[in-house]
Length: 141
Image (cartoon, rainbow, N blue to C red; front, side, top):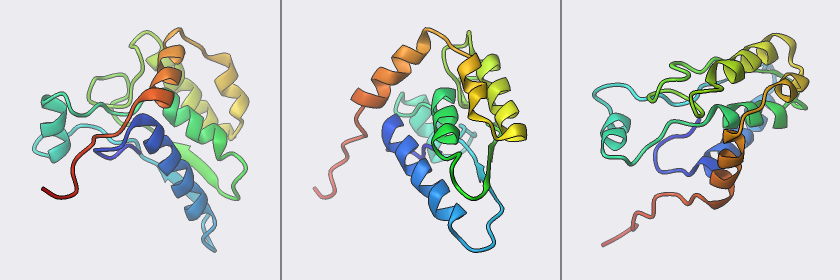
């Protein structure tokens, strides 16, 4: 989830579509959503160091899980590096609580676990989902 050059909203919507397409494949039992994290010696790391990439918000991970609860497959996620600036994170204050809710969802497949966690930064995330635009790289020079 959230490859380079996609906005937060585009990445969320792309992941929702990907989960739905995977779950529709005959024989698919489980879909594992893996949020991008920043690893050394990668293009993502170069973009991150230059201020051109931010890993996804944990709110986005939770939102995808909530919006795909109706698919005919188990949908799980275990964000690597959650809470660090190089992994999926929110504001730092709520990262562990949201990650715990994600883990609870993985076990129970019950979206009500996300109703039990909140933070002021969710309003910031809402604004980012609505207003952030993707990197506007020209297709030709």
